[in-house]
Image (cartoon, rainbow, N blue to C red; front, side, top):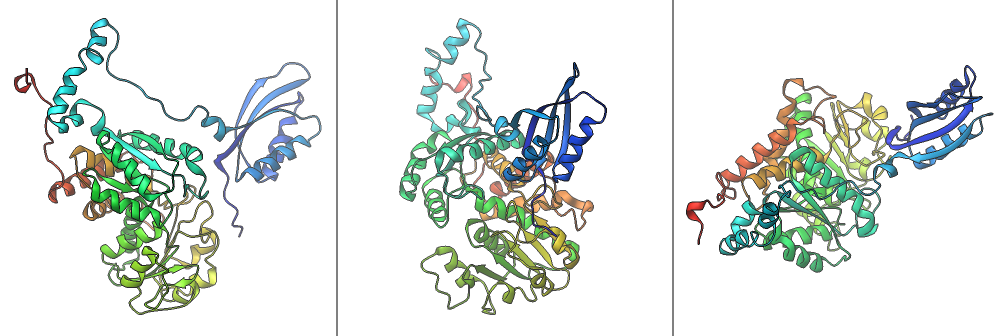
Length: 482
């Protein structure tokens, strides 16, 4: 079975072409596309006049190289002339994916005098007297800053702030679409943790929350910890905790399917960057104590040389109760859960076969997982990946929009471990009676998810005393100062 990724709209193209205006000519095009293992999506008929007809063919491929192969195959067909090839993903991103849009009326001189000078001075004075009113009289209370230095973007690594911007814009789109939260991308040109902390501290007064994104480990741990100590608004590193929340939700339901208890299973986590470490901590706080972390140097045990890496030190001090040593295949024996956030194809079928009965595999490397579902299927009870083209997609979009919605609605001063656990339970509960081995987690497009997560997070924040049941109301005529 090939580890080649499936065809996807992410590698789509539109091919404008001329072909002979005779019966059966398009069938050659369709066959060539199929023979090249690409997917024919849409066919637009642009013209049928004269000896040649014009068609626009939408094709999905598996990679940029695959796109080039398909174009070459079509180009070699006799009588076919390609006029233009349009990369639909690049076209989608032209001019960005977001804009600033005002909703207050600005049609008359009266509107102008209220929106700007002289009327704008009045809310300014109210906020100067009570800074809390910035949440009511500006967009602050519904706005999150998405902060990155572009050092750990998707599977691309350190590509810099400019190249990270499309991802941050996409994140803003998800915040707005799924939870009605306004988000602003802040891509900074520094890798110095102290400079990033200082920058965020300086801009924090105008935001309701801070979402840290795509910052490499171990720097991301230091930055988040310092900001959480300095700020009285939610600070959340989504690559860590968003992934962990959804993974725990998936594990809750996978354990229901297999009839196992979280306190009794053995888990192996492969890949100990920001996501792997956060998932381990979430599992640990939920009751899973027999965790073994594996990095490129093998399993972390009591005598492991952590070389000052705080993530490794946490694994050394809190996990691997039986002090198992060796490589991945050594410690995977008898495990109930494999959780991978590492590299493509590193988990072999033979290693999976050594796992406990009714094993659970979360292979979350993207775009190619540690083991393809087709290879693992007959040897495990539950299989999940980070991909949308297989069942059980563990996608952090299930967590962060609702999490921030709930935190903003009660003006929580932080994101706590309890709030994260509440979010995971809310996501797991949505599946309800529909639970099966191939449906342990709701769809990322399910509109109910953000609402349920927001409700659970808000209630938990209130229970912990860091959120308000009724946030400070906006001033009325009777309590305004004149």
